[in-house]
Amino acid sequence: MKMLKSNIILSLFAGFAMMGSVAHAADNALQQAYKSTNVKSALVNVCKQETAKGGKLSSAEVSKFCSCQIEAQGKVTEAQKWEIQSAVNQKKNPSSLAFVQQQNRDLQTCFGPQLTAKLKTLAEAAMKASGK
Image 1 (tube, helix red, strand yellow):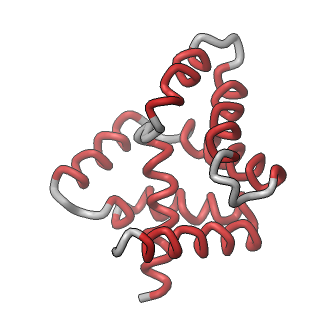
Image 2 (cartoon, one colour):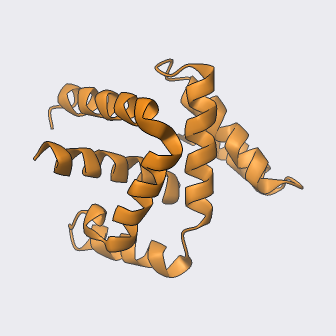
């Protein structure tokens, strides 16, 4: 169960980034990022600004997290986004999709073992705090 929960947690990180679940305050920053001459770099910077606000990760961890996350987000095809949305609409967990599982493995490799463990711990604490 713990492994399943961990995979779901990382799926949540990936899913939130992929589906654009960003606080309303960041909307303007995202719009500006898409107008940049280097969109990828601008998106990484927006991610860093928003992630750093949580105060749970060091600046090096924020940088690593955002670099990995934006890289992974960029690899998701439109068809895969549709699959994720279809799973959500069917009240299924997107982490059951093979490509999401692969993305989670790729993210864990990119994050490295220390950041992966820290993100799992933070996500589990957040889930407990929210009563789930």
